[in-house]
Amino acid sequence: MRITQGTFAYLPEFTDAEITAQIDYALANEWPLSVEFTDDPHPRNTYWEMWGLPMFDLNDAAGVMLEVNACRAANPHTYIRLNAYDARLGRQTTAFSFIVNRPAEEPGFRLERSEKANRQIGYTTHSYATQRPEGDRYGPR
Image 1 (cartoon, rainbow, N blue to C red):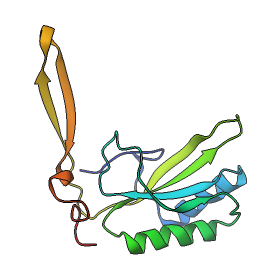
Image 2 (cartoon, one colour; image 1 turned 30 degrees about the vertical axis):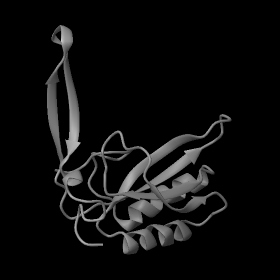
Image 3 (cartoon, rainbow, N blue to C red; image 1 turned 180 degrees about the horizontal axis):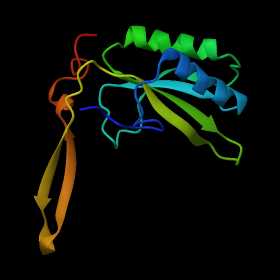
Image 4 (cartoon, helix red, strand yellow; image 1 turned 180 degrees about the vertical axis):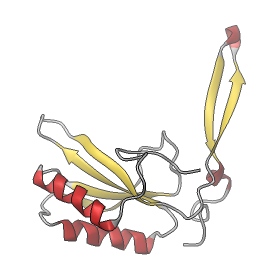
């Protein structure tokens, strides 16, 4: 199962040249970028681990790709995403966010259904990856 999260979720995986083009677009719009990673890509897990600090003063796509590749080297079996932030309206909003690295095997999610009072039905998603301990979910680190 392929996890689909972010701006370009239903497109094929981006090459490094295509990622660089998106970085250039963000920098042209003066959007700072950040790199994050996780081994639990649950849709409600919006707070991933940050790789370094957001790159507010960076004006070169090569510098951002350097950080992306460093994160890939340190965390090859995790999900890594690139975020661009837009603060033009006086508040920080996410301009785009997309996955730039994923584990070789993605076990997916299970949908759990539960019946509640007054004939209500609730649904919960459960990641198969979380059945293994953190750091061992998608292979050795």
